[in-house]
Amino acid sequence: MNITIVGTGYVGLVTGTTLAELGNSVYCVDIDEKKVEGMKNGIVPIYEPNLEEMFLRNIQSERLFFTTNLKEALDKSEVIYLALPTPPGEDGSADLSYVLKVANDIGEMMTEYKVVVNKSTVPVGTAERVREAISSKTNINFDVVSNPEFLREGFAVEDSMNPSRVVVGASSEKAKDIMAKIYQPFTNTGIPIIFMDEKSSELTKYAANSFLAVKITFMNEIANYCEKVGADVDKVRLGMGSDDRIGHRFLFPGIGYGGSCFPKDVKALIRSGKQENFNFQILEATENVNTSQKVILVSEIEKYFSGNIEGKKIAMWGLAFKANTDDIREASSLDNIALLLEKGATVVAYDAIAENNVQKLLGDKIQYAKGMYDALEDVDALFIATEWPEFKNPNFELMARKMKNKVIFDGRNMYPLEIPEQNGFYYKSIGRKTITK
Image 1: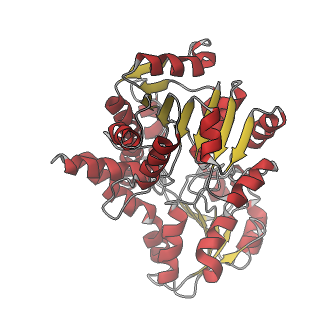
Image 2: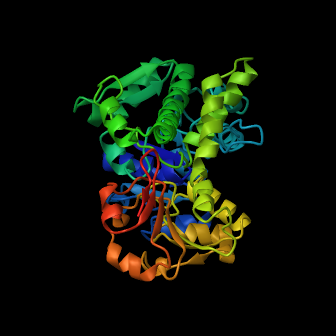
């Protein structure tokens, strides 16, 4: 099948590459000429493990194409996926201007039946608005479908090629048949495709992401309470997760959630609720707790240094919002850097993958190290903000030689407590006993 993907951000590029891998001819459209030219030359514009190999294979197999010409791609395809940004506005609501602009363009350009698929995360009722936008420009028959993505950054290729389910919101039998044909390689292997109405499909994505944000935040609250009463959150987490009604995933405490999805989707669902005179009280509490949780270790750093960190040099390992991505959107590292700088500390950071994105944002407000141990040279403390695998088994002897103080503030609970203790480090993590040397 010939398919067009409009938007080559994280969702669009992974979706387009996956659909090409499934044997379709996929035309990816983006307005950024430099980006499109780069992709034509085999340059993947995002970091995602295992994506480049699949990307290059499908370019070489002539199943994956890139263009800035929407009309050209539209004329070649029966199915058009919209994978456009829906950034939060000042009030937290999703900005649909990109989606509706392309919907208008499709209406003006289409000359035969198309299925327009909303892949972007959008509020309930967006399919109707897209349908109205296209209808205002054409009398040609078309269908609008909601098909939310459930990709985890860092595991997107795995998730895209082996999804737990495919959700499709469609009221047209013809559109359902076409979507079933696209995803037949999945259903042939037992992966379910769940058909529903468009509104339920749109809400499913928001509900899923918001529930996971609540789960993370609840575990962070439990971790903070553990510290008050002397319990160990790792043991509590294992005990809870062994209940198959709860499960082990998303029970890891830390310095809050970030990224492009959870913060935005929680905000959007809160705002959508208010538009219907409905208060998502649990989501409002989740958002408030997460804001505090992100910087919870800064007060611990201040406490260690007797209330004053002015002039202190803090190393930061990790800048991405999570491991295996270069995404720094809503990253806890940025909140902590801002607060540390405000209190007069200096920050030297290391993240081999996300550093360039932070440098574009912060410039020379912080220092950047070439390696994880280079970042430790003569620092007063180490702050771990991202759980990159290379940080899991460090050389503590080398760390001790380089650091002015053997002090670690770990926002991702990277080490069993006995490891820093055996190496003579002060070690403060989340929801566990503090090792005081």
